[in-house]
Image 1 (tube, one colour):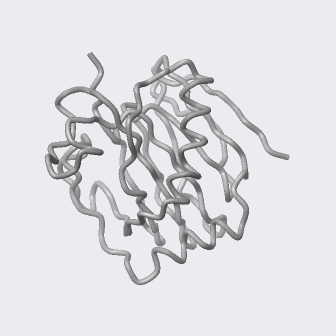
Image 2: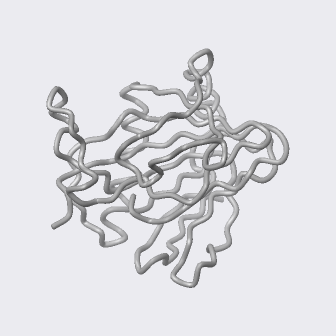
Length: 201
């Protein structure tokens, strides 16, 4: 049974839909990354300025399939309206596929600042230039692993407790602190999209 849930973190909400993306679609997305994965590199917009094996161990690939954007857009739109964020969203970055093998992890970080300090400087790309990440969407693509939990930090420093199943979608403000705990067995695949708009004022 599909479950949609709202949970409060850092005085904001994250929304998740349990197991809403079917296995066939998850397999299709994973296949798009095969042969393209490489070690994650620095993304200047995020707070994780200095990445190393002590901070992040993930392989990534990028996809620009229109149907992928459409898939993520519907969940972003629902969360943006239902959570009452009502952020001004203008476009979306390329979808990032993440592959966490055994020992893979991602320490506490924010996907974006939301402010002018976090805006894209890409004058050649009118869909991104001057915009900042506002809403992050993540989709868990596999179940055959242990560890690898997505956790958010609350005001008390304790993450809300919930488990992700394959096909689960999570939407949250990009400025929320979160991390992925180390994978202890198997391979964790996920897909992430960042929706951008004018920086907060």
